[in-house]
Length: 233
Image (cartoon, rainbow, N blue to C red; front, side, top):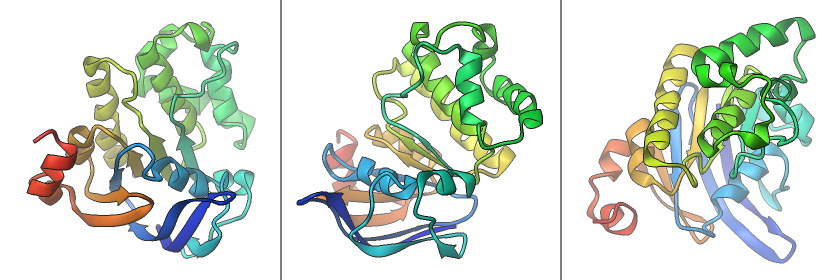
């Protein structure tokens, strides 16, 4: 579904990614792990059209990725950003409507019912301003907002950040469920490598803007060097 070929990208003179190549197959969950500053968030921003690569190419569904955020979203890619980034003064309902802005209005309510099946707690808070929700509820809303666009590929940036362990467990149960039931391909950027390995089919390890390891998640999570560096072993 997605292929990055020899990508280099950054911010002005700061290079965040260097000669990065990876692929995500249709129906997979792929996780990318790495320390702070490794370039993980830059990678998702680049796929979303927020950062322009200086070298290399991105291929999506067999064609070159469009060059604008709107076209990328319309093509079926949704980005759930780090820190949730909900619209705090808008209600839960209006946040969800914003997520479906590219879809026909008649499909919005149907999509919203779909989200409420995934996260019933959001339905209970449908009229509540998003800024008054708990951190876990805001994360559910950010994910639900992404689901509203009926994506082919969903990308998640640090979904466990700042959440209580019980809420993290609930959020991570979402990934395999939606992946299997709805066929949504996923990229999960996560510092909680143990949780990420449990839900992902394959994993890449990013260090200083370069891919240094890749493989099946169940193999990497038993690798001594990975355990020592990322799993607290």
